[in-house]
Image (tube, rainbow, N blue to C red; front, side, top):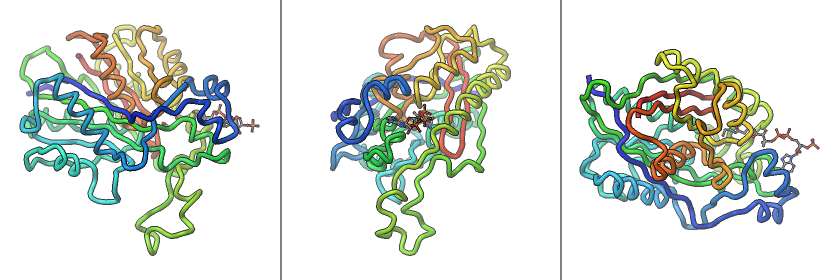
Length: 331
Ligand code: UT7
């Protein structure tokens, strides 16, 4: 039975840097509040005309440079995003065209902050089933265009940001080599409206109306409720995946949690009893880029040589839906 190996990664963010002081000029907030409550110091937001496909293409180009592969080596694209450039079709197929891939399957996976964990689990299923051998996974979001940058929207506006990460995975047949050891995926739709964007939507006639512009087209979040669930579900899910894999948390070389809020990552770390060197955070520089946080962080870890073949690694995420999950793998 083939196993999945991560061959290489890349990431890209917009050039425009938005600092906490920049936000304090737009709304009633402060660098002190944002730093203490979220750990974020700066994030990247697109400028008008910059697309999700631009960010993804730059991230994928870097992943190709790292792996020595190119578009003709890829058998399928799984594109995790909740903010595709257009209502339809999705960004996966737009990327296929933009980068000159063959006529391979390319589709969007919409699992918000859990998009990368879901995509990696799906790629593993494809590889283990023998359906595809080399898969490109992209996590990409442009959140800044759905943020309310007045004081009314400050709880979300200070957190969310834009970016893209790309991960190339490939099948191999070496026993005891790299492999996904366990996955643990969940969802609970009764909380869908705790973190959502109401409009535009296909239920409205027409889909986009003047009264949608403003609150209903902004990302709305019940921050405290999301925080409470995230800090329970993520450690619970990592523990379930570790138990399935037969591994103790202490044996992990690295946990890369979804970068939602540094306080969430720190609570997850504490609940799992992990040391500081076992958990990677970069939210200070990027903010919360939804499906892109884990692949961006993973790319930084690879480029700074934090991982070696054989290391045990875990990813965990929680977000809108609610959807959450974890993956444990042997690097
Ligand atoms: O990506 C996955 C999904 N998202 C998340 O996981 C995010 C989860 N939630 C959070 O990270 C946090 O709940 C927030 C960062 C959004 C908010 O932090 P908090 O510590 O939960 O603050 P709070 O909502 O309890 O608000 C505390 C106070 C309130 O003022 P009062 O009512 O105590 O006077 C807020 O109005 O802080 C106020 N506040 C702010 N003040 C300055 C809320 N946002 C801001 C802000 N600047 N940006």
